[in-house]
Image 1 (tube, rainbow, N blue to C red):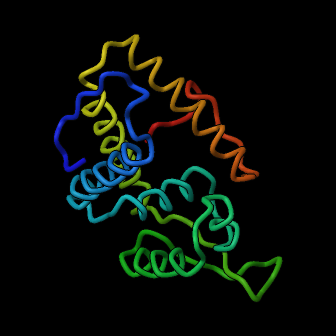
Image 2 (tube, rainbow, N blue to C red):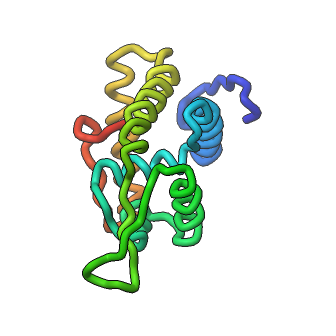
Image 3 (tube, rainbow, N blue to C red):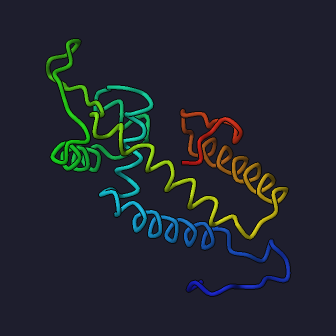
Amino acid sequence: MNGQSVKYERVTDMNLLETISLLNRKMNAELNARLMEIGLTSSKSRLLKHLYNNGEMTQVDLCKELELDKSTVAKALARMEMYGLVAKRTNPDDTRSFLVYPTSKAAEIVPKTREVFSGWAKDVTACMTEAEKELFYELLHKVARQAAMLSNSSRPLKHPKQANID
C-alpha cells in the first residue's frame, strides 16, 4: 500500500492492519502539515485540547487519561511551556507535583486546531455520501470500542454522536 488506490474484489480481502496503519500515517502527516501553520503538531494539539477541555491536572493524570508515555508528554509539555501554551503551578494537594494548565494563548489556538481536525475529517470523507459517513463513523466506533475492550482499556469511548472528531 504505497498510496495507490487498491481495488478489492471483496472488502474482506483488504488487509485491515495495513489499511489502518496507512490511514494513521497519512492522517498524522497531513494534520502535522496543516497544524504547522499555527506552530503545533498533532500530538501537541491533542494534549493542548485535553487540558483546555478539562482544566488543570497533573502530568501523571494527563498521561493516564490520554494513555501516553510519561517521557513523551514531559518533552511535549516542556516545549509547549517554552512557547507559552501551557504553564505549571505547584499542586497544593501534593507539593512534589505540578498542575499543568493551558494559557490564554492556548485558548486562542484551540479553536484553530478544531478547525484543522474537522477540516481534515471533512476532506477525507468527501468521497462518501452522508449515509456512508454515518455508517463509517458508527462502524469505526464499534471497532474502536472492541479494540479498547480487547486491550483492557479502562477508558470508555464516547458514542460517535457525542464524541468530537477533532
